[in-house]
Length: 253
Image 1 (cartoon, helix red, strand yellow):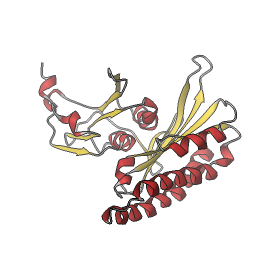
Image 2 (cartoon, one colour):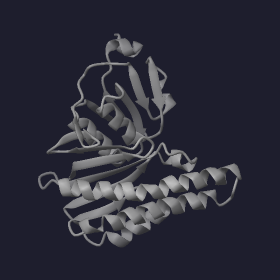
Image 3 (cartoon, helix red, strand yellow):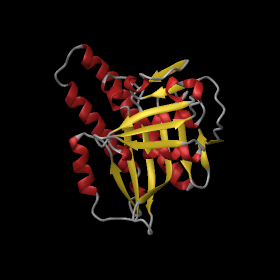
């Protein structure tokens, strides 16, 4: 697992410079209202995934490598490379892509490694990591080593410190009452921030629960309670962390 960790960490850090560099160009294109902005953004996402996949190619013997995202070119990349079904897979995704789309580096890169469970035929996460270029933090979790921040082991407790929440949408805060709230549409970064104790509670929504594999696994390995519920529109709501009754009028009953 240490070898896998090292290979993935090196690949993420090296490939992230593509997005950081392109974020500056996106700011310039937006300021000039350039019609090529959308095309440049899509090419940047595709270039990142192609680069990180090359750096992870040493793992292709044992793992299917999947690029997650809604850029059409990524479907072609996956189709070309998924030539056979393997018992292990690695999923790469860029969280907070809408932040990158406006030239902000408040995005993060997450990777999770999964193995197929012979009893359930489902893939279970055994390792996940997330890199945040904004502050240089590298979060990781594994079945053997638990949850770590910059390779330092961390274990969350149920101690409420600041009554703070990380939320991916302002709509999820309508009935809440917190001393401080951070609203950024970066799903896995929010969960990692709760796992390490920076925030007390995470509230998020995603269209596909696969988008949240990395963050949910980190929370579980950090000992944080996670609630995943499916909505009528087939999206998923995620609540993780600690919500005492004094946080919300909803829970005082």
